[in-house]
Image (cartoon, rainbow, N blue to C red):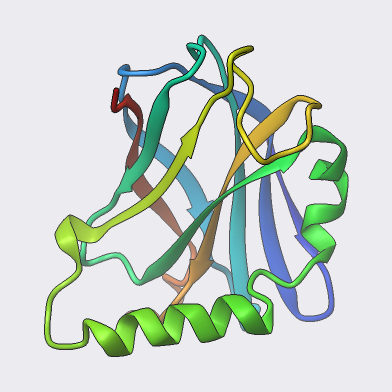
Length: 168
Protein backbone atom coordinates (compact mmCIF):
# COMPACT_ATOMS: atom_id res chain seq x y z
CA UNK A 1 0.00 0.00 0.00
CA UNK A 2 1.45 3.35 -0.98
CA UNK A 3 0.18 6.85 -0.61
CA UNK A 4 1.40 10.16 -1.96
CA UNK A 5 1.70 13.03 0.47
CA UNK A 6 2.11 16.58 -0.84
CA UNK A 7 3.85 18.86 1.62
CA UNK A 8 4.86 22.39 0.54
CA UNK A 9 5.68 21.58 -3.10
CA UNK A 10 7.05 18.12 -2.27
CA UNK A 11 5.54 14.78 -3.25
CA UNK A 12 6.55 11.86 -1.10
CA UNK A 13 5.49 8.30 -1.85
CA UNK A 14 5.32 6.36 1.40
CA UNK A 15 5.20 2.58 1.42
CA UNK A 16 3.24 1.94 4.62
CA UNK A 17 3.60 -1.81 4.42
CA UNK A 18 6.91 -2.76 5.98
CA UNK A 19 8.92 -5.13 3.88
CA UNK A 20 10.96 -7.90 5.55
CA UNK A 21 14.75 -8.10 5.17
CA UNK A 22 16.55 -11.27 6.30
CA UNK A 23 20.34 -11.76 6.27
CA UNK A 24 21.79 -13.27 3.10
CA UNK A 25 18.46 -13.34 1.22
CA UNK A 26 18.57 -10.63 -1.49
CA UNK A 27 15.33 -8.96 -2.49
CA UNK A 28 15.67 -8.55 -6.24
CA UNK A 29 13.35 -6.52 -8.42
CA UNK A 30 12.13 -4.23 -5.62
CA UNK A 31 10.30 -1.18 -6.96
CA UNK A 32 8.59 2.01 -5.86
CA UNK A 33 6.80 4.78 -7.74
CA UNK A 34 8.82 8.00 -7.90
CA UNK A 35 8.22 11.35 -9.50
CA UNK A 36 5.40 13.57 -10.51
CA UNK A 37 4.86 17.12 -11.61
CA UNK A 38 5.92 18.60 -8.26
CA UNK A 39 9.48 19.96 -8.17
CA UNK A 40 10.60 17.71 -5.32
CA UNK A 41 9.62 14.06 -5.21
CA UNK A 42 10.81 11.21 -3.06
CA UNK A 43 9.88 7.78 -1.78
CA UNK A 44 10.23 6.21 1.65
CA UNK A 45 10.38 2.42 1.89
CA UNK A 46 10.52 0.74 5.31
CA UNK A 47 12.21 -2.60 6.00
CA UNK A 48 11.90 -4.63 9.18
CA UNK A 49 15.12 -6.56 9.77
CA UNK A 50 14.69 -10.06 11.14
CA UNK A 51 16.90 -12.98 12.20
CA UNK A 52 19.99 -11.02 13.26
CA UNK A 53 22.64 -13.00 15.15
CA UNK A 54 24.41 -11.78 18.28
CA UNK A 55 27.89 -10.23 18.05
CA UNK A 56 27.82 -10.05 14.24
CA UNK A 57 28.70 -7.56 11.52
CA UNK A 58 26.24 -6.73 8.73
CA UNK A 59 26.13 -4.67 5.58
CA UNK A 60 22.97 -3.47 3.84
CA UNK A 61 23.49 -2.81 0.12
CA UNK A 62 21.16 -1.25 -2.40
CA UNK A 63 22.11 -1.74 -6.05
CA UNK A 64 20.35 0.29 -8.71
CA UNK A 65 20.69 0.96 -12.45
CA UNK A 66 22.89 3.88 -13.53
CA UNK A 67 20.28 5.21 -15.96
CA UNK A 68 17.87 6.02 -13.14
CA UNK A 69 18.32 9.65 -11.97
CA UNK A 70 17.73 9.16 -8.25
CA UNK A 71 19.69 9.45 -5.00
CA UNK A 72 19.43 6.69 -2.42
CA UNK A 73 19.90 7.13 1.33
CA UNK A 74 19.87 4.31 3.89
CA UNK A 75 19.38 4.88 7.61
CA UNK A 76 18.17 3.08 10.70
CA UNK A 77 15.49 4.70 12.82
CA UNK A 78 13.52 3.72 15.91
CA UNK A 79 9.98 2.67 15.02
CA UNK A 80 8.67 5.63 17.06
CA UNK A 81 10.17 8.07 14.50
CA UNK A 82 8.41 6.50 11.49
CA UNK A 83 5.38 8.82 11.61
CA UNK A 84 7.54 11.98 11.60
CA UNK A 85 9.70 11.07 8.60
CA UNK A 86 7.51 12.51 5.80
CA UNK A 87 7.70 15.93 7.39
CA UNK A 88 11.48 16.04 7.73
CA UNK A 89 13.84 17.36 5.09
CA UNK A 90 15.36 14.41 3.19
CA UNK A 91 18.90 15.68 3.68
CA UNK A 92 19.87 18.10 6.37
CA UNK A 93 22.84 20.42 5.84
CA UNK A 94 25.24 17.91 7.40
CA UNK A 95 24.12 15.12 5.05
CA UNK A 96 24.53 17.40 2.04
CA UNK A 97 28.01 18.51 3.17
CA UNK A 98 29.16 14.92 3.79
CA UNK A 99 27.74 13.75 0.44
CA UNK A 100 29.42 16.64 -1.40
CA UNK A 101 32.74 15.88 0.31
CA UNK A 102 32.51 12.20 -0.62
CA UNK A 103 31.71 13.02 -4.24
CA UNK A 104 34.51 15.60 -4.47
CA UNK A 105 37.02 13.16 -3.00
CA UNK A 106 36.15 10.47 -5.55
CA UNK A 107 35.09 12.69 -8.44
CA UNK A 108 37.54 11.05 -10.83
CA UNK A 109 36.24 7.56 -10.08
CA UNK A 110 32.88 6.06 -10.99
CA UNK A 111 30.61 4.99 -8.14
CA UNK A 112 31.14 1.32 -7.38
CA UNK A 113 28.33 -0.50 -9.18
CA UNK A 114 25.81 2.23 -8.27
CA UNK A 115 25.58 0.94 -4.73
CA UNK A 116 24.69 2.55 -1.42
CA UNK A 117 25.82 0.81 1.77
CA UNK A 118 25.10 0.86 5.48
CA UNK A 119 27.18 -1.21 7.91
CA UNK A 120 26.30 -2.07 11.50
CA UNK A 121 27.09 -4.52 14.29
CA UNK A 122 24.92 -6.34 16.81
CA UNK A 123 25.51 -6.76 20.52
CA UNK A 124 25.28 -9.96 22.60
CA UNK A 125 21.44 -9.77 22.47
CA UNK A 126 21.36 -9.35 18.65
CA UNK A 127 20.36 -5.66 18.92
CA UNK A 128 21.94 -3.06 16.66
CA UNK A 129 24.76 -1.40 18.60
CA UNK A 130 24.76 2.36 19.32
CA UNK A 131 21.04 2.76 18.59
CA UNK A 132 18.06 2.84 20.96
CA UNK A 133 16.89 -0.49 22.31
CA UNK A 134 13.42 -0.18 20.79
CA UNK A 135 12.51 -1.90 17.53
CA UNK A 136 14.38 -0.43 14.57
CA UNK A 137 13.39 0.04 10.96
CA UNK A 138 15.67 0.37 7.97
CA UNK A 139 14.52 3.28 5.84
CA UNK A 140 15.36 3.54 2.16
CA UNK A 141 14.85 7.16 1.10
CA UNK A 142 14.89 7.63 -2.68
CA UNK A 143 14.99 11.20 -4.00
CA UNK A 144 14.38 12.30 -7.59
CA UNK A 145 17.66 13.66 -8.95
CA UNK A 146 16.86 14.69 -12.50
CA UNK A 147 14.26 15.56 -15.05
CA UNK A 148 12.62 13.43 -17.67
CA UNK A 149 13.69 13.85 -21.25
CA UNK A 150 10.12 13.03 -22.23
CA UNK A 151 7.40 15.50 -21.18
CA UNK A 152 4.65 13.84 -19.17
CA UNK A 153 6.91 10.92 -18.15
CA UNK A 154 8.11 12.38 -14.85
CA UNK A 155 6.46 9.62 -12.85
CA UNK A 156 8.28 6.30 -13.07
CA UNK A 157 8.98 3.06 -11.26
CA UNK A 158 12.39 2.96 -9.59
CA UNK A 159 13.92 -0.51 -9.53
CA UNK A 160 16.58 -1.74 -7.13
CA UNK A 161 17.95 -4.80 -5.33
CA UNK A 162 18.50 -4.75 -1.57
CA UNK A 163 20.44 -7.28 0.47
CA UNK A 164 21.42 -7.61 4.12
CA UNK A 165 24.67 -9.52 4.11
CA UNK A 166 26.37 -11.19 7.09
CA UNK A 167 30.01 -10.17 7.05
CA UNK A 168 31.41 -12.20 9.98
